[in-house]
Image 1 (cartoon, helix red, strand yellow):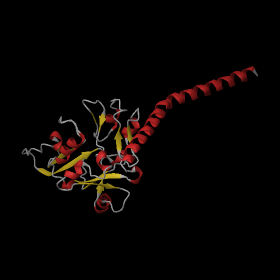
Image 2: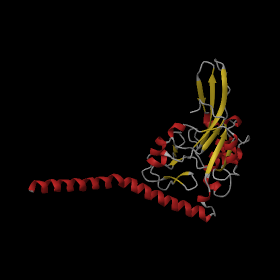
Image 3: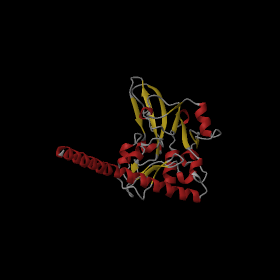
Image 4: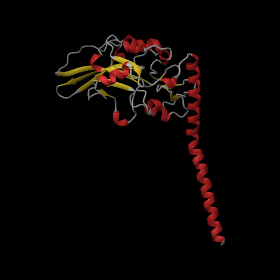
Length: 264
C-alpha cells in the first residue's frame, strides 16, 4: 500500500514538472504571438485612419524577366523612396545579371545593385545566353522570418505583406539569417532589420510601389491576387509562372515569367 502511494506521488510530481517545463518552453512563443497581435492592431489603426482596409486586399508582384533590361532605375527609386542607405550593399530590391557560358559556367553579378548599370567585359568563353533578374523580398505566405523573430517585430499583415516594426526590432539578425532569398539587411544607423515592404506607405494610399512606377519596360506588375480584373491576375494567367526556391514551401507572392532554371 505504502509503495503504491509513493509511486503515485512520483507520478504527480513528474506530471507537475512536465507542465512547468511546457509553460517555460512555450513562454517565448506566447510572448511572440501577443507581440504580433499588437503589431496588427497598430498597423490596422494607421491604415484604417487612411481609409484602407487590409482584409480587402491580397497583394503580390509579377516580374517578366524577358522585359528587364538591367537599367537599375527600380533599385535607385527604391532607395530614394524608402531612405535606404546609399552604400553599395544595402538594398530592398536589386537586379542580378546572369551570364551562362558554353562551357557550363554561370556568372552572376550585381554591381551596386544595378544602379550604375553593368559593365560589358569581353568574355574568353562564348556566352550562350544572358539575362537580368530583379530580386526582392518574396512576401511569403509561410515566411521563415516571421517564425524566428523572438519579439514579433516581423509579422505578416492581413493583406499578405510582410512588415517589420522597427520600434520592436532588437537587431538580433535571426530574420536575416532565416530569409532564404537574402532580402534583408541590418540598417547601419538604426540597427534594425529592413526589407522591401512593397512600398507600404504608397499602396495604402492607392499608389504603385516605386520600383513598379519607374520601370521603363513594365517588367514589374503589381496588383491584387484576389481580384479577377487585377493586372497581376492577368499576368499570372497569360504567362508560364515560376517562383524562387519552390522546394522550400514558403509560397512566395513574387511571381516570375520566363524564369530560367539556372536562377537561384
